[in-house]
Length: 274
Image (cartoon, rainbow, N blue to C red; front, top):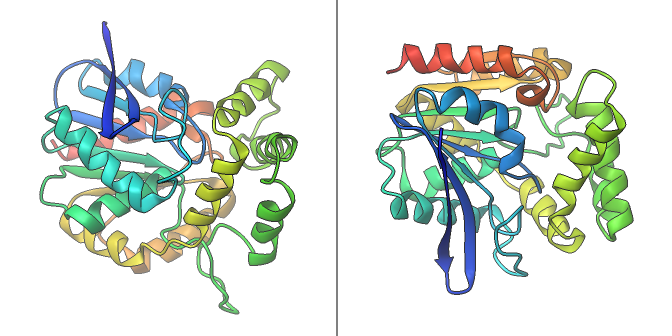
């Protein structure tokens, strides 16, 4: 099946790289922090048989323009709207992974849900940080996340070490082959460390609980969360987004490691909301 590639200008001098495969109802996939269209290759192969499948490199990711401004999720939400408009995408299912969920929620904050068919949100709490004694579902303890920003995202070596440790400890459950780990790290390093630091802080200080709650009431919504925090995440989402469907699978990169099972979960959801 032929894949179309395009560069879409979202502001003067800033282009986003987009791939489009297949025909049918549009399914738009947005990668997470510093990652690229390539992580969704198994989903593109599967869903392009039945859907118009679109994958985006956000600004300063992958093959999109590297820029020192707009590296925050407010801008990413605006960028998404511009891409959808340029491609004449109507009534899409938006699928965000990790910080890509923040792009989806920011789009909803700015533009609402009227033009969205459904939502698929992969392993991202709508608020990353909490100081409650009884923690909600969050990305991690404040001190740990502050240390990651301060100690690792200040130079290329630290970014490599941070992504490598995250890949082996959180993203994937099995032992990675050397070439697999190299590929994952190289995906991230396409975003320079000084931009990665901006994105990291923007993501951690975001709060999209309102958008997550309201959108799940407005359009069919599926959350897929990693097994390592399944109980906490499911309990939290059942309270915040009771109308949403919640599934658990694998680690943070479950759609890559367990692609067949993940694709089956998503396909069932899409069939249930034609």
